[in-house]
Amino acid sequence: MMPWGHFLVAAIPFSLYLFLRHRTKPTGMAVLLLLLGTQFPDLVDKPLAWRFDVLVNGRIFMHSLVFALPISTLVLFFAWRSDQLQLGGVFVYGHLMHIVGDFYSVFLGSTARIPNNMFWPLLPHQPVVKPEFVEQPSLLVLSTWDLVLIVTGAVLVGYACLDVARAAYGYSSSS
Image (cartoon, rainbow, N blue to C red; front, side):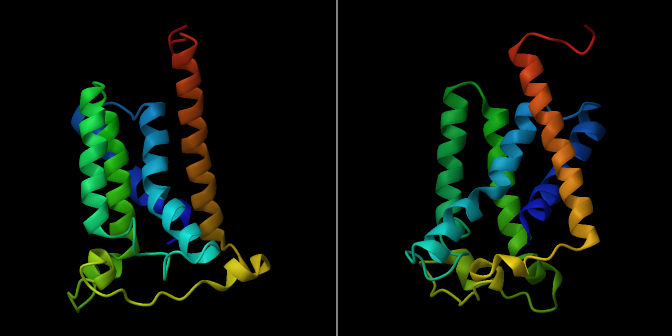
């Protein structure tokens, strides 16, 4: 799944939940933390695998529940200690939704076999092919749907940045 797909897979249900449950919209800081959370596994795993050859593939370290759950616990603990539990929860939700997004076919398919990579290093890793665009950036071709998702994500992130800046400088929407 591409970065914008990860973000929107988490952002749409999150936004709908806030609207339907609380009749509100996500704050800018929540959107930015959601964006960071949804990209976190790839920001760690992909460079370690594709650039530095520390990992055997780009979906085993932060994509593994063996590491994701303790890290989530730490994030929630520090968020609780700093009285920012909801924001910590948004990051954790984004991280876990990334994992679901990468392995969604398992949950939707007829074979209910959970991939070994979700439990690495307790289980041996499964090979993941390095995408061609890593070696040849010209092969990264975007479809119309990709562009729609990128623009939608950019609008949400732009809104989030404006919201954070507005809060930082004390502006309100009624001013």
